[in-house]
Amino acid sequence: MENTVEKILNGEGLEVKEFDSSPEEVHAVVLRKTVCYIVCAIIFNAKDEVLMVQEAKPECYKRWYLPAGRMEKAESIIEAMVREVKEESGLECQPITLLLIEEQGSQWIRFTFLAEATGGSLKTEAEADAESIQAQWWDRETPLQLRTNDILCLIDAGLKYREKPRFTPMLPIDLPCHVICQRLLLVFRDPDGELWILLSHKEDPRVPVAVCGRKYSLTWVVRRLARECMPSSPGLNLKPWGILGVQHNGRMPGKTDGICFNMLASVEQSADGGQSSHPPLLENPRFLWHKVVSPNIKEKINQRLTSRSVLPMYSLY
Image (tube, rainbow, N blue to C red):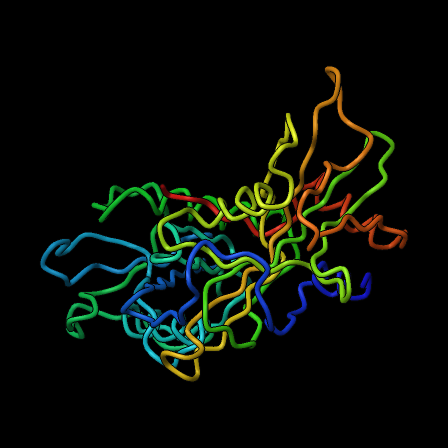
């Protein structure tokens, strides 16, 4: 079991076989029908100028934005990002890392990459088409009419990662899934630093996988799982820390359009004004607390909890 946990902490993928929590009947998601995935790229040149494209769409005509767009059927997340950058800017690129993920529930998810240019040339106005008018490098000081200001925090995140990476580079793992779900590495840490991990299926223990509801934030999943496991436990403090891995394939439209997010979260329980030294009582017989024995796993979990060295996910609800 701890070998499996270590794989998750190392950013490796695991096949999704069963679900341990679901808010509704489970159906396969379908890209551009029941889910929408957006890709976005942040690319800097040697002067720390950021790649920008001038929009051609009527609703934001001539305004500037990062290269971004919707994923197409049968694409991987990386393929979609590379295609959008080429179509809108004229440059070829390769990803460095996923930088952050934003979501409005399972129906809209944006993947922002830090990437680097590897070839091509900047699109000029003479090459304008339905994708964009032109592309240019922006020093972030020269006035530029932006489509929206939401990209400013993305650009800032890219600069900070270049200066001091908070987590090791992470790229999507090529593994299929038919729904949007989370594999939840839910951790309890006592005042002495001992760790427990929530597992499902006592006969064949594993890290639980929960299906994300269409109407709720993806970060809400850990709260739903906690209600199912420990509904009567008072003073619970649940905290989603971030993403340890992203699994997606998408090669079979309508069948593998889902995504599995391997998520790190923690739970604390107050007791008599202080932190409890025991994990919350589990009232669902399908789940159990496993006390971590491996010093290596303890170190990795504590390091991620202390330094927040995980890929951030933000809810835009």
